[in-house]
Length: 263
Ligand SMILES: Nc1ncnc2c1ncn2[C@@H]1O[C@H](COP(=O)(O)OP(=O)(O)O)[C@@H](O)[C@H]1O
Ligand SMILES: [Mg+2]
Image (cartoon, rainbow, N blue to C red; front, side, top):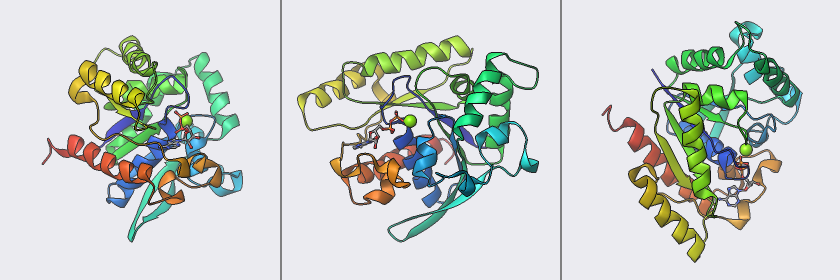
């Protein structure tokens, strides 16, 4: 039985897609059975995984998965590589039109298609995997609500600005509104600089959320900005960048949190 990890923050540009793709790829390299889901119609994670044209994903993706299309064969397996390590991850990619039409359907819930039904599908999938990593859209979409309903852990990437707290607080508020059971929210500071604002944000986050905050900070690296438009993940664009190195340590911290109780 695996875990569902939702990567969520209502604010845009806080490193959600970067964190989701990097974590999924690193878990794949560490031989975990992982599925990366792109639930954002913008499809940044989809781009980063190199599925830019419809021909590449062949009409298989998250929308088709939720609609039980293609005889259940909707996950596309991708080989991942990094410094001599080889692995693979499953991807449920985003097709803009299909996810938007799904959102419209979820606006008028039916028996077969509502956020609880989506959450159930996610749980079923996680039962067969080690990790299901879900990249969510900014704002509060129905697909994000479904991901939050199903999540075992929510990772909230925050950038070092005055809105960092508001971002984490909003995640907590949304969770309270959509489910009864408690679920851990783990903030991670991304795109950090060596300036006062970054240090202050981090220490205040620690003060408020304590051990929930990841020790590992992801630094801003100019060399990876806009990496997704190249159809590659951050780890592939500049594998030696500070940001890539930080994500490696972050993935290890994540695993030790998740698998500590099992060991
Ligand atoms: N550590 C980093 N260093 C530099 N640029 C980054 C870093 N992480 C993300 N970016 C860039 O910041 C932008 C926003 O990141 P993204 O992960 O797409 O955020 P979100 O999914 O929350 O909107 C992207 O253009 C990405 O290339
Ligand atoms: Mg995104």
